[in-house]
Image (tube, rainbow, N blue to C red; front, side):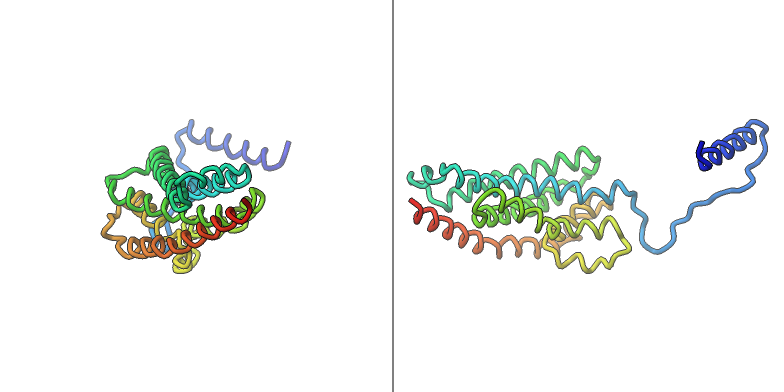
Amino acid sequence: SLASTRLVLGVTTLDELRGASGDADLVEVTVSTVGEQEWVPVDDRVLPLIVIYAVMIAGLFLPASSLVQERESRTIDAVLVTPARMSQVLLAKGALGVLLAVLMGWVTLALNGALTGQVVGLTVFLVLGGVMMAELGLILGSWAKDSNTLFSAVKGGGVLVIAPVLFTLFPGLPQGVARIFPTYYFLQPIYDMSVFGTSITDHWLELVVCTAICVLMLPLVASMGRRLEQQLAATV
């Protein structure tokens, strides 16, 4: 047997014999948290990672892959022959992505026991996160020429989407760096409201910044939609 196994067996046997004889432990171990930062269990620190994957898959990947698939199968050409315009197509796909992102976010929080009394605040930031991911998905779906290009872009740029999660998993990292990533502004409030019980009024700055990001992305979505429409018209 391994030496480590024999050591474990020996220590365990001594503990059992000491407990049976009523002798006191030779060593008393006390665990103390060092530092000013409040200790958070690992399962709570992993929560933003689970939420971002749920929101990203539903909000980003679904609209993007749907657009690319319709381009490859040419079904979008048939849609645009009807009175429907490209803006309406993008709006429909984006709205579906936002709806599923919010539902997936709620299910994820519920399964992890993270639903608190901050129902309104959680819903607001889940909606903003879904809108942000859906807009990014529509941009990628309009830009990617095929599924391989889309998958490569998502795998290569996905690290930027989930980057704020690293600062939650490892509190020792400089937390201010996380603010340079757009997804921080809906992930951090969701984390704080679920774990620490903060309210939406405590995150008014994140609310303003997240809303501004979503609004600023709209012209880019519209521009990519017009570009895609022109490309489709040129191939007909």
